[in-house]
Length: 78
Length: 78
Image (cartoon, rainbow over all chains, first blue to last red; front, side):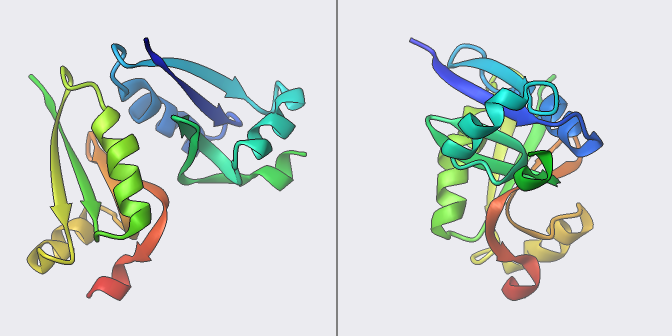
């Protein structure tokens, strides 16, 4: 069974670079990738925070948050 | 032809988590992964800096540096 990977972003250039290069480079045989734009889906911000996301872009793998470079603080999206 | 992915770390817990979850989750059909421990291979620190690495753990994909969470500043390894 595939694990779920969630990529949270906010459409910023740093986010798009991380999406293109890191999130989309995950092994598709092992991960099912969901991409969430927190600027457009503001109702998901609380969910992201609950998973430990402090800034975007961030990738959740096996429940752990990995912040990739720095685009924006989650507090600035609220 | 596979692209080269380089994962720079310094053996810290944050580094090991990023290695296990992010670096080793890359699509093996697309990336050939090289893992470099900058604490043990101090001669590679200049190379990492030249690639834009500011802190570890960091992953180089297609020549671009992606800093994953924060373990240690590269300056603290020199």
